[in-house]
Image (cartoon, rainbow, N blue to C red; front, side, top):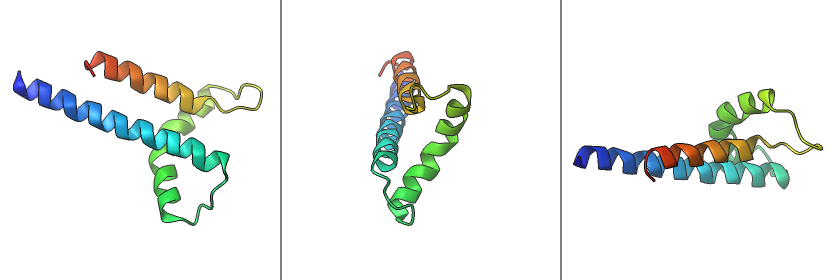
Amino acid sequence: MIIASFLGGIVDFILEIYGILIIAHVIVVWFQLPTTNQIVQFILSTTEPILKPTRQILPAVAGLDISPFVVLFVLWLIKLYFGG
């Protein structure tokens, strides 16, 4: 029981951090920050592997990329499943 709680906490923490990275990705793209910055490169390299396939499945709505919102929603559902 303790191990399951511990693992659930770790999964919750990782999903929270990834959600923050997704929001940072939106900010980076919105403000068109230079991709030569190492922090920007880290954000893009960690979020694009999930956002790119989502972007290919879901078309932009009125020119707006909704893939970050979809990924954040799925992360929220996963957190609910694990009890976070």
